[in-house]
Image 1: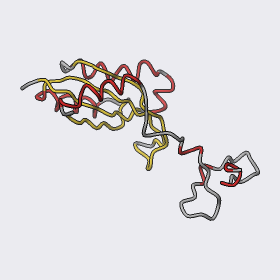
Image 2: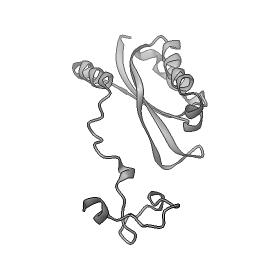
Image 3: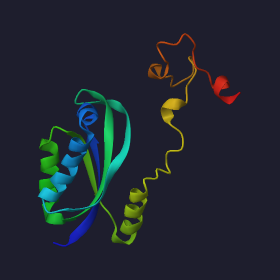
Length: 151
């Protein structure tokens, strides 16, 4: 089978990553290389709160990787990812060869055009639908309001 380019988004254990960011993120590259893959780009994508707990974690570290791999080795890579305790989840997509160079170039630049505003930085007033109690600073006696941010 021919070598193809893949994009993988790894959800890493945030506690382990905080204690050893180089070691935990390095596991991703080691796993890919152990099955014969070639790393094109591997970098931190984001760290954020999860929509629901995964393996007891409410936050996760997202690690974005582009790599070249023989498709017949993909099942072994997925298996190794599920067995590794540093990796909570993984999503691997095959990239169309026509756009692969642009995606890899964009990942190398480190730009995240989709995210212009930190979602956690936009407070929602109490009483409005979708209020998230985690956005309120418990040490502060003031309740954040949109008027404070606008005015």
